[in-house]
Length: 113
Image (cartoon, rainbow, N blue to C red; front, side):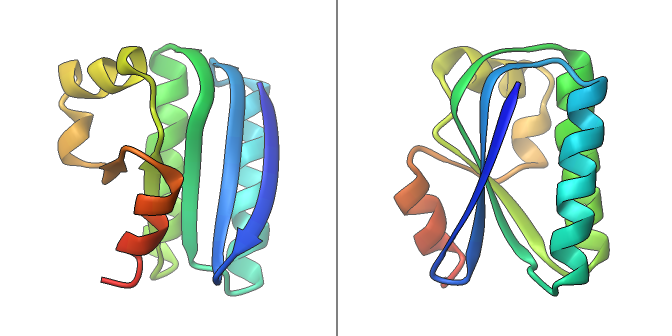
């Protein structure tokens, strides 16, 4: 998995690319989120448009990310998941835990609502 970070309109957008399988990837994401929290960046958007596959460890990684940001008083949203990833969230009922938006633009707009 590759991870990229950018900021727009006060929102940190973390792009995940490739296969999200936990392990070392989880450590990288966790460290990235803790650095954001230290800088008081509490609006985080995970752009899943580049994610092809995700396993249970990858889902755990997303849950840990959400917990980290919410414990800091922030919010984390998901955007642009493929049908495959979206159905994984539905099957595991995590769709009720995460706020998923069809595009990054719509997810960004939802932070202002």
